[in-house]
Length: 131
Figure (spheres, rainbow, N blue to C red):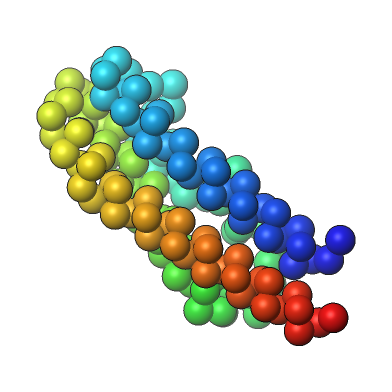
């Protein structure tokens, strides 16, 4: 398996895991609590994808690509907004949390999924070019 094939697989996994955030945040709003703290949710480098994405698997050439930079920005914004939703949910401000979840968070989630898809497409193109 090539380096890009491995990356494509990781990206697909990240897409699935980031889709689960909405359900987890909705649960936190309903229950008024969460197993994850807002501080941990805010850290885009501590989720499994973030650890891989910011880890040694990528060199400076990778990190200078437009697709990598777009995903980095979208991913950080996604986590910042998830943290805000959790903070509101835990503090009992469920209506504000719902509004943020269905508004700004939904937009951030879509941005992450689009950025992941574009990056995955870039990896596939690069993989074809190396054959």
